[in-house]
Length: 274
Image 1 (cartoon, rainbow, N blue to C red):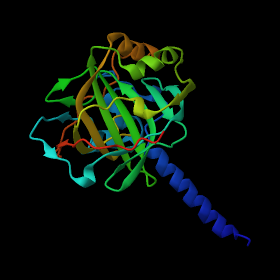
Image 2 (cartoon, rainbow, N blue to C red; image 1 turned 90 degrees about the vertical axis):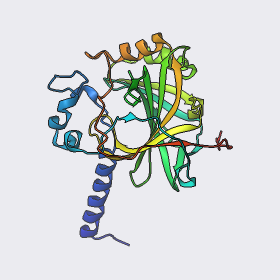
Image 3 (tube, rainbow, N blue to C red; image 1 turned 45 degrees about the vertical axis):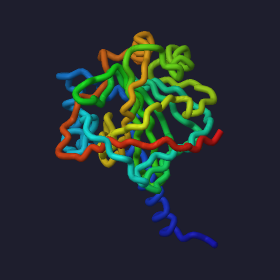
Image 4 (spheres, helix red, strand yellow; image 1 turned 180 degrees about the horizontal axis):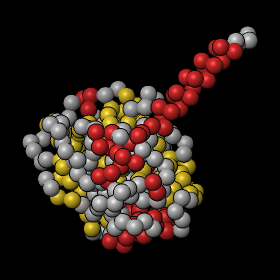
């Protein structure tokens, strides 16, 4: 069957539209267009003015990160549980200019929340932590970014304080030190399940990406248990990107009346597909 030119035009239009939608949901790959230096024309308070596509960074009402309050724990409803299906994947390590990112190439790991599957796309680190708990800021924060087929985003945030080295980072640190700004290298085969997610309490709220374009509607899950990382590991992550800032953490954003839940999840068998 031959497709008419008009039909081909409409198909092309919808393909372009769907690709554009996917891109706008993602953090920018080239982070040299903005920085974390307060008072600078490219600093956090000015991200919303750099590009019209980033306007929500200044106008949004559901922005992240926020301070997470410690309050009475609620038993997690069935729909709010996180079911993990993590599998070994080929990875790329990327130096994006302000952070180091792991890209999970095979896209074969996912989580399920409230019946929606979110594919693990990438992970990256911020130092110090972007989220705080009762006003306490930690030394490092890892974001595991997941995305559904209809472009919904769910991020798992893990917080770390200075202490014993993080075993997962220890495996990668030599490669991380070798990546130049804007470069990427093979990260090897890694199972995301190697990232420790201890504890059974976590915060859940609706927020945004913490870098431009600051897309809102992001489902955040932040683990209450604090992991440990060495000073040397945090320094290696910062030294690798060669930026002008001592940190790559966005300042806290107003909560604007948003509900933040602290859930307790009973012990159960998670599914890890090897």
